[in-house]
Image 1 (cartoon, helix red, strand yellow):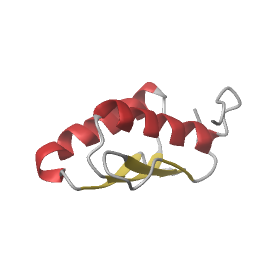
Image 2 (image 1 turned 180 degrees about the vertical axis):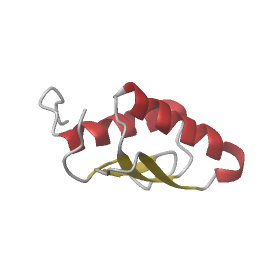
Image 3 (image 1 turned 180 degrees about the horizontal axis):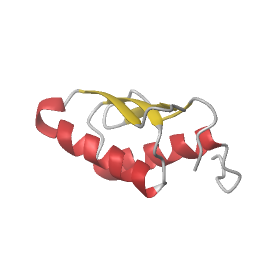
Image 4 (image 1 turned 135 degrees about the horizontal axis):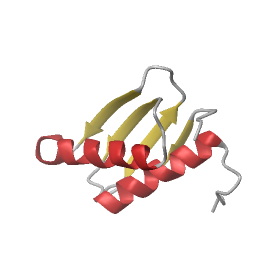
Length: 94
């Protein structure tokens, strides 16, 4: 899937994560801020990267601001941001 525009998903509320993704030519560049970085930083990065890989995203700049989101929330926010960025017509905005 090819990213076309900058897009975001999520909020800065407790137990959520805000993902901002934009097209890039330099592989995956991840900038993560988290209130639980010491405990779960590696796991959050892993979930984000695995989700991007499952969507065949090889080049993207991602800014993630985590407020204690669990893995399924992280995954869904990344997916939503990717579909919005790619302007994927199969994705339905809710």
